[in-house]
Amino acid sequence: MVTTERPAFEFHGDWNEQFIATAIHNGHDVRSELAAELVLPEADRLREEDPCTDEIGALVPARVVVNRSRFEVDLNRAREEAVYRSADEAWGLEIVRDPPLDEDIVAGSLAVYDAFYAELGRRLDAVAERGPFVMFDVHSYNHRRDGADGEEAPEAENPEVNVGTGSLDRDRFGPVVDAFIESLATTGTSAGPLDVRENIRFRGRQLAAWTHARYPGRGVVLALEFKKTFMDEWTGEADRARIDELARALASTIPALEEALSEVATT
Image (cartoon, rainbow, N blue to C red):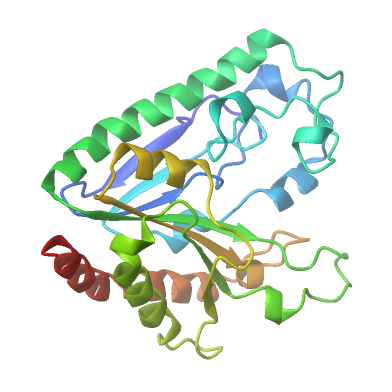
């Protein structure tokens, strides 16, 4: 999809609360000047994006939704790596017609990156001033890499929900992480309890690291990777009932997190 009608990113909800959900790889839009250079098929691009992660976070009080594709600018990478200039920077995928990209196009993408972090910082400054906060950094991951008819990846190495805490001060905020995992894992769904484990597939990346560095002792980013059991990753067809269940499950952890945060704040 090529569009300049929707904003690159949007902030929703009540930012007077201490719980935020982000969906920074949710987007599929690209600027027209970049779209003209892309050779990656749209279906392949969609498969590597994180569609519906905005819906999984929809019941969290404050929300950030990114409409631009990670193939325009990846907000979960350091600035110097945020624009995929070649296949080497994008899992071997051929992204653009004649790499490297023109620097004017790169500059336009980095302008989105800078604007995003500037606005997020402005909002989070006020949140952090009130006290510790939790950010649900919502992503998703493919588990059927061998093709539409291939075997699913082994469950032992691919939890339903991976909780990334690689850059978190776990000595201080470990009880918050533990409360989240316990609460989410004990939430019932139509398919049974969720398999929730920490740092199995992913540990979190730029958004988490940036937040933890900017708000030490205040920011708690839980980088959440939901296995794409809520959709067919090859056709893009979403299971709306499952997405609703996951959204309710995520929001249901907030009371336990509030209690854990209050205990941490007094120690």
